[in-house]
Image (cartoon, rainbow, N blue to C red):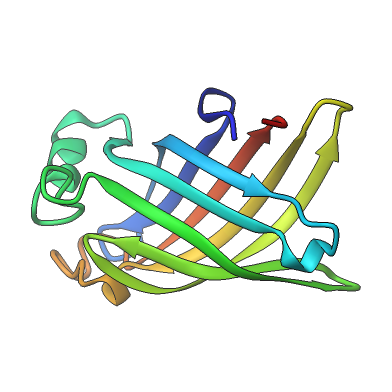
Length: 157
């Protein structure tokens, strides 16, 4: 996976759902293994907690703190796939997300995949409940659910 050519964006709502908050996280590294039987393919991605950016320095510093992501104590957010399910509607990548040392299920809807002769790009979207990972600070003031969009660029090793 090409971390520089990949991105993670998030969207949530704050102030009791009234204020949209958008931003990015930094991709640290990743490995995508494409198997002959595509359902056996796998994805392993590491996102850097310190790379949280929303365009508001005070909020960004607070989210990186122990109140939320605890970037100093848990510098990496990880996703590891368990299986890929294909259907007429598309593909779903089931796996586990680890945030602040807590691991839970996470389903990523694969929106698109495009091959360019050397590698490929892919887009996936997931809905994440921060409470499921023990991040419960400022209930109501900070959005509970985040929509995460991941755009991946991968080239053969």
